[in-house]
Length: 499
Image (cartoon, rainbow, N blue to C red):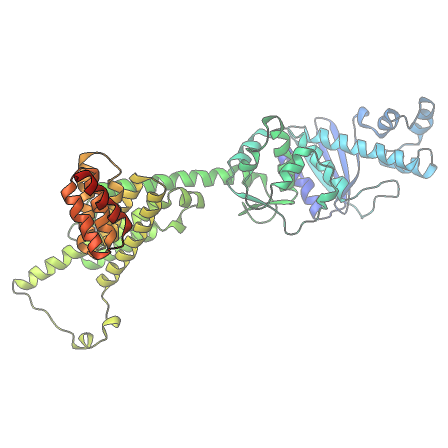
């Protein structure tokens, strides 16, 4: 609290004195001007200034509490403004209510004018608690003094920009010391307070506010953050908000997010154009152990938890694709190694049997390749679930991408071929239609007892005027399920056309 300050750090000084309930005098100076703010257990009860127009007498005269005939005797009695206020109270020359009103106006003027400084020097001197009977203060008055200072604070532009960029939720403090229902709030301030429920960020709240009220609203919100009434979730650091963290911490996180996004994009590009051993970052002739370690290293490097939250959300699909492609590359490389090993043994190599291993129960002797294959099947099912979501949302491009990824992991699942056929049908291009037919036929081949496969094949052929093939597919469906209404209706309509 001793040293140079700017308006944002001055707000932190006031906040720290307020929250730690310090008693003393905060002296603020700049180019020959000195102002003092008096604290009693963290609450502001008096302020004075070396400027003549910020003296207590001027506020008393302005309020017409004193007349010109009273000034000569009063000026002789004053030592400083605090002593004068106490003397006026003791002598009864000024009603207590009017005296306290003038003192509050003087405090407000001193605090507001100090926050308008670009910079200054501060020093705090501890004093015993207690301000005197002439002064009245409380938590709400102190809060309002500080909020009015912040409302007029200079240099707020960078803080406003940082608040807009901060993509974190706001919530009321769990240790709320301020009776919010007793505050005299401007309507826009009340609206801002009503939106702080742990689900909205500063940018989301600001988007609901008219441009003419935005500055007032953000200054109010900044005051709530500085004074600990509102908290950022997750916080920028431990303890009360530090403006430096708001200005730099957010920028550091944003720059980290940009770096991580570039890494993910580059990895996606490399995986789509390189070979399996290039994807794993190893030489073409690497051994099994080197391959396993390379795969695990790259897999761990692209786990979602390693990236900042926003990158995890925006690039969720890309991270899943990277994980799937890395697994696919590892399996392909491992299969090539196994084939090379078999060829070596076929040309005179010997194979040593481990009797103990052969005697183990099957479920306890699962090889690493089997585990990887099972993981590949699980990933395929996950890709299939994503494909269905995109299909329902009519995002056919992504649906195709995820279907193809699912089929790479498990080509023997009829559901994957059937969904891919349904998606491909949506594109009128001939090549896509041919692929759609192949996918539907493959689904029917794998699962010939699913009547829907033949109904959709019938619909496909009928749409392309291949009526003989359509009729054959519908008859197959009716043969399996005579009560299938769609197949029966299609056959009936085709019969009427023939007649």
